[in-house]
Image (cartoon, rainbow, N blue to C red):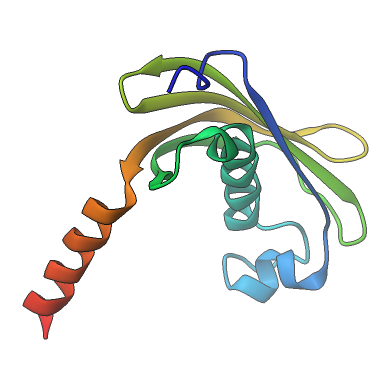
Length: 133
């Protein structure tokens, strides 16, 4: 997986709609861009940086997030989330992430993803499901 290296970048852009607001998601009462949606955009930016470069049968999953939501963004404003791969340690990928609206930086932090084997991962999920039934 030499294709995965520090310096890779990904991006996710969206226009904030009512479905992205804290009030709509139940994560607060304000009619502004919700923190869970910010986290999702940052994760999608990281996915966009690396997942297309993985060999068949591999994918990444989120492992940890340390994110600050710095400023509110109203409905109708464009948000751009960016991720830069800053280190590769075996299957662990660490990203610097940040997001801006049309006026300012609204979020920043780090995000770690892990490269997984989809077949093995699916078997783990299936065994957990079977044990739960």
